[in-house]
Length: 276
Image 1: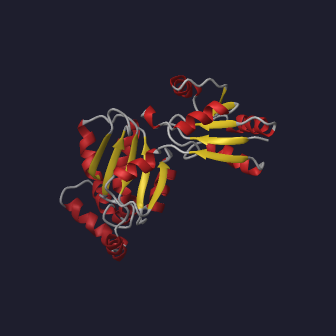
Image 2: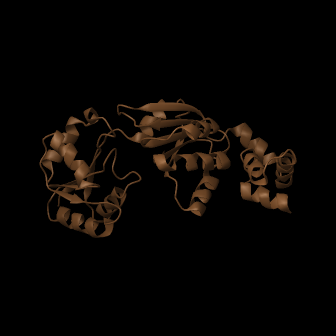
Image 3: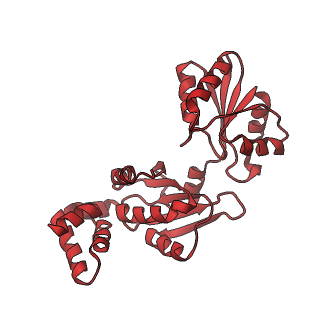
């Protein structure tokens, strides 16, 4: 029986690929890659010639069993993702689980990760943090996720694609309030950019700009004082606050959204109370 090597790849800059990672890929019998076309470019750049097998979220069951069988027969395998560490918000975690079940040794060959790199340059607290990955595209699951973490004091880390960034910023404002945030895009690449401000600042920014590149969002945790203040406000009081905004000419939905950002209640809860 041989081993599975979990090999991190560069998140943008090929110079970040370690000599150990190069030697590992040269030494294994085959490579399991998220996208063989992307990995082939990396292998070609470093003069590596190895057979590859496609392994991604749509074939993890069948290919996972095939990879495990080959390792148990004596072949060594390296698993790579398109960028960064495999097995983090990635189907590779299932392959590592299978290795554990079958008593197969796993060896890690680390690389830069977008989450940790972004956190390091965010300017926000790094002492405690929570990696939340990608928010679900399912509206209810997305809402439940944000509801679960809205009172976390630790810094929050999200991944987001450019075409969904605006919607995510809106949802963060509604669920978490107007907190400090750092948008880290195209890390280690030519157009790397770290944009700091508040969530509402970012919403205004992208009203006139189109998001480009892959983003890591680093969001300030819930302040202790703010959580205490929110806890003291009742649902009835929150509805009264929204009512005052409506009387000033605001739309009911907008008023409830604004008050939700200032209290522990959701927009829908305040809206129902306002109607009643």
